[in-house]
Image (cartoon, rainbow, N blue to C red; front, side, top):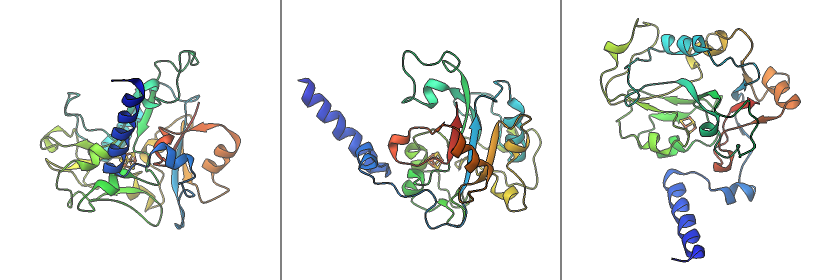
Length: 253
Ligand code: SF4
């Protein structure tokens, strides 16, 4: 098969995949097919992760999240359930590295979580509205009771941000937090930006567990918020921006 035909078929396949999961292809984004983040909502929660301050051993941050949200530890990668974890820089940012990438980033483990995308393909893929974006503040939520375990959202998320409970997670929770629901076998889960804590005026647990302001949380709609200040003053990147999902997690390199 000649190269031109092969490239054409690749593009067609990518377009079909994008259409299946509602991901806007790159050309659409380049053509200006993206609106302002949080258009029409009062608040728009976002996170900035400062990799210059991030200590690769910051496991306390993950532990704080997983403890509060009853995330089970199944002890094997295949069935792993995770809300916030680390990934190699090259895997987290496949379009941001090259053979001369800064040595300090090569192979570096960087924190990743649900990006609470402003245009979330997972929401479009869900047949039961078990996952939805809140109009009020843009958080992409899960209604565990509505989830039928079809995993369309898992396939639709281009960031691997969703976990599926292949078995009953309850026996694998070290100490159950009665303030937050546990899940059952066959249910998908992910980071919820600590919506339950925001509701009572608290910061997300991961942000609260930071000792060096590595994670900063705030309202993109508030020009005086700390996240807006950082976005104004520092260069930030997002994961896979060409997909048009408009992640609301930003990284300072
Ligand atoms: Fe959905 Fe994945 Fe975006 Fe989170 S990161 S909102 S799970 S598409």
